[in-house]
Amino acid sequence: LAKTTQPISMDSYEGQEVNITCSHNNIATNDYITWYQQFPSQGPRFIIQGYKTKVTNEVASLFIPADRKSSTLSLPRVSLSDTAVYYCLVGDVEYGNKLVFGAGTILRVKS
Amino acid sequence: DTEVTQTPKHLVMGMTNKKSLKCEQHMGHRAMYWYKQKAKKPPELMFVYSYEKLSINESVPSRFSPECPNSSLLNLHLHALQPEDSALYLCASSPKGLAGGPINYNEQFFGPGTRLTVL
Image 1 (cartoon, chains in turn cyan, green):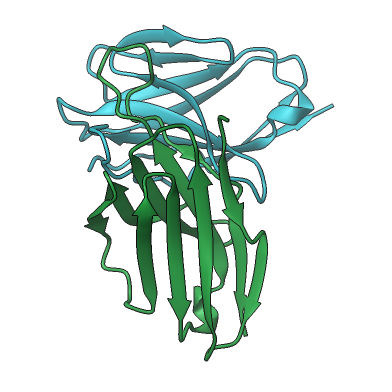
Image 2: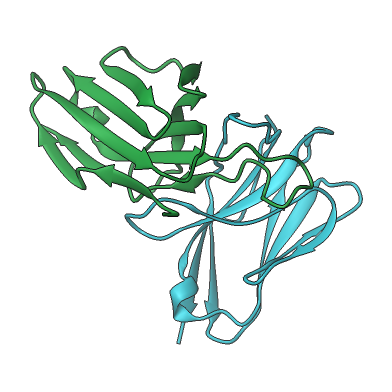
């Protein structure tokens, strides 16, 4: 399973765009890139998933360059409620397969 | 019903006790998972059940015994635990998705967890 590297923490202010980059140099051909969000004392929540180029949904965008060795989660106009830990996961997302969480990035949004 | 429920929310047990954690989902998902999460650490996979059969055991000590009685229910039986087993135990489930299909490939839906303290 590809190892991921993310910043340990980031600070931002309300209304700003936040970009969290994840490095995954050993990503394999079958691997997808998935991001989860976790609030204290809650289970992680799926944010977005992609294989290549750009994926956008109602909460975030995921940018993946052609070599797929890194990816960037973009959160537009963050609010205080976006303060959480964000995990980047890389792996073959076959049904019933395992997820390996990296260390995650603690995002603190200030007013 | 689009959620995974876990009971109890909190559990305190002694090292000689036997207790069980329960997880339920009614989304028709056929894969279910147990994770362990220590404070300020990421979740670590313990077990995966696929179609009610144990498919992955991440070398978890035998004092943790999983059980999947049916497609909606997942239990984790605990016996002779150690204080270092104190953690948040998370259950998750996932649907059978296809790459590029309408649902996110193997998106896992997590429950709120059971906070376990072993004295």
